Amino acid sequence: MRVLYPGSFDPITLGHLDLIERSARLCGGVVVAVLQNPGKQPSFPLERRLEQIREATAHLSGVEVASFDGLTVHYARLCGARVILRGLRAMSDFEFELQIAHTNQSLEPEVETLFLATTTRHSFLSSSVVKEVARFGGDVGHMVPPGVARDLMRLFNRGNPHG
Image (tube, rainbow, N blue to C red; front, side):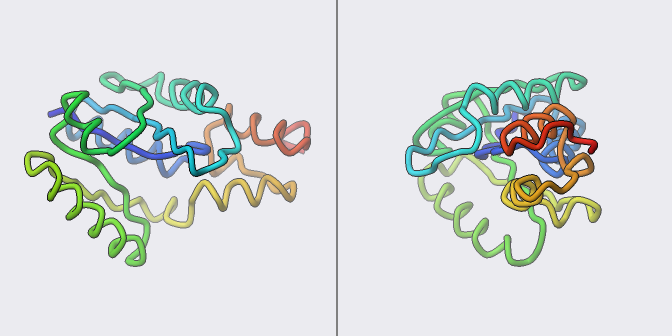
C-alpha cells in the first residue's frame, strides 16, 4: 500500500520523522510530499526542505520525497497513493484533521485518511515551536535531525548548534 504524507515540513521535525518511519514499516511505500503553498512564506526554500527530508530519511527504504501544489487528494491520485497519512499530537489536532479528511473524501471517495498518533516524546513538537526555540538560541538537537539543526542555527545566525 502506497501512502502519501503531505505537509509543509518547514522544517521536518523528529515527530515527522517518527511518523514516516512507522508508516514505512506499516505500509511499505511512503511519499513524503512538500506542499508548495503560495500563501505562506517558509523559512526554508522548497529545494532545501526536500533535501532536509531526503537526508533525514536516507536510512529508510520505500520512502520517496516530492513536492506538489494544489489539492492533496489530487496529488494522492497522481502519485498512486490510496491513503493520506496525518499525524495527531493532541485532541486539538483531531477536529481540524477530521474536517480535512471529510473534505478530501468528498472530493476523492477512493482516497482514505489514516491518522497516526505521535509518540509521547514528540507530542509537543511542531515546526513553529522548533523555529521559535532556534530563533532565541535554544538547543533544537533533540527536536530535529542534525542537518536541520545546523540549518536552523545558520538561519538565525547562531553558529554552532551545540554551543
